[in-house]
Structure formats: C-alpha cells, structure tokens
Length: 269
Ligand SMILES: [Fe+2]
Picture (cartoon, rainbow, N blue to C red):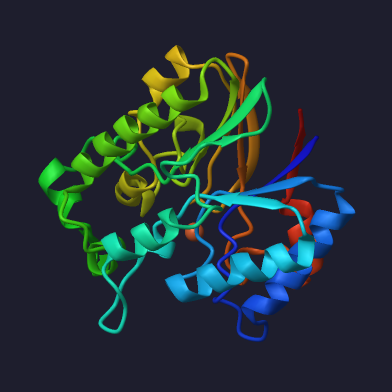
C-alpha cells in the first residue's frame, strides 16, 4: 500500500490560483505517484469553510481515503467566524480528521494524529518564558496570538496535545504507527540557531514533549508540517518526514504541478 504525505498546502494564499486549482493539481500528483491513501499534516487554509470544501473536493477528484490533522492556520478564527473550539469540533466531526479518531489501516498498521502544540522549547534560551508567551518580537506578532482563541496557554495546549495523543495511541493496540502532527516534534526540523528572527520565533514551531511518545510506542513514521521545510530524516529507526508545500513565494519555481509532485512524499507499507 502506498501512502502519500503532504503538509502546509495553504490553498488560499496564491494570487492567481484557487483552492480548486490546488485540489486538481494535488489529485494529479496523487495519481502520478499511485497513492492509495493521502495524509495531510495540517495548514490547508486560513478559513475552516475552505478547509472542509477542499477535503471534499479532493475526495471527489481522487476517490481515495484522505486523513488530516488541523494545522494552526486551519484553526484560525476572526470576527465573522466560529471560535477555534467550534472549528476544531467541526473538524473532529468529519471522518477524515484524525484527532480523537485514529485510522486503522490493517492488523499491522494504524495512523494516529494530533495537531500537537509548541512549548517554546526550540527558542534561544536568552528569552524569558513571559516574553515568549506574549509572542511579540521587533514589531511582529506571532499570528496565533491574535487568531486562536482557545482558553488555554500554549504550554497547557502542548501538554494536552501529548495526553490526547497518548489516548489515541492506546486505541490502536500494538500496531505499528504512522504518527501525524502539525507542529515539529524533532529538534532537527526547526530553524538552526543562531538566527536573527528564529532565535525568537522557533518558540512557536515545535514541542519537545513528544520525546516520551517515541520511546514508549511503536512509531515507525512521524509526519509533520508547520515549518515549510521539505525534509526526511531517520533517527533511531523512526523516519521523520516534513513534506511542506509552503507559500508560493517559498517555492523554487512558479510551477505548482512541479512543486506539488516534488513535495508529495510516499511511504510503502
Ligand atoms: Fe504553514
């Protein structure tokens, strides 16, 4: 079975192309790679209605099973939108959402997913926890501070994400696991320090709290997004994969088909 992996599609961020164009291009890549099941590791769009429509459209076009975890952007709210908690519940009510509902592939394999949350662990130690909790650095504000309205602090969210992931891991027995998070869970996937901006903003990229999970559960693959890298790394028999499409300005070419096909990673189980 071939499983396709992709993250950070940001289908509403292109000047010329629509979310439907992204769905068409991704479905072509899925066909080209002969993928049987597709995992999206978060950040489909900035609005939940676009996220839901995109997944439905992609299912129509590909006719394969799709599973996703919401990214931080997928959870953003605004004045005319439901709260983040309501948006998360909307996703959880979908069959395609992995949060709270692991996907059992067969007797040997399962997919477990959670957005995860950052716990500031990858920032430079020169910043205090209070400063990082404010999210402001040289006139720039980490946008989750303004667009996420959950009633928990980041460090509480990071803890809760680990607990919820463990609850879902317990549901899949002793199967081998493909773990999907949106935020980064491995130190080699954040921006190398020192860095003018990411000394600070690395705080919001990942969590160190999943280390325990890798030690205690049979994780074989760990899929993540959020950092807009495209990178694979094997560490202690676990393959970490970060298959981010990212924003058009971050692409190497202007050709979406080429970028999509190069970004989509495939694992075979
Ligand atoms: Fe993203």
